[in-house]
Image (cartoon, rainbow, N blue to C red):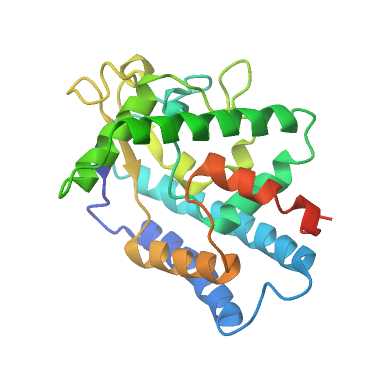
Length: 244
């Protein structure tokens, strides 16, 4: 997989990045030094959801400007869904909360949780079957993720047509994947070959760092970076009145 990095900071790209950073800076100023978990989780949940929706909106504007720097057309389209077979990691806590709040009101919520659980168990089994090698942690994780991808387990949030059923609330890690080649090459067979020209657009370092700090301040706990596992963790909070 290739990793896209902006090579030229156009005025439009600079403006969208500035707006993204300003949103984070303003929120961090308010949150630092406060016990935001407090006694009223409902208030904080709503605040997280509202902030994350605004963050995702500004992220999309920044991302579109970054994509304009390339001449090659993106070949992703409705129903391709191949990147949705990855085991999604790097989920920030407020993103997980926003997505959970959307999913918990759906009729198929129970099915989604069951499928999340099965995918967590599958990933754990693959991890146990392939112990990490000293000094090769990064290569080990890449190999582990590739083995999971080869199982072709679709994301539980995909609909029958292969489209994301919670597209507006999907986390950044799901928003950043693109390909310049036909979706048929976004498969386990071609993923690590020259035929596949998939890539993802990384957040600017300062934005990623600020968002991670905000996530840590809001989370105040041991939350998984796995999309499927953190949804299960949030579901366990239902009995504590978090989402009442």
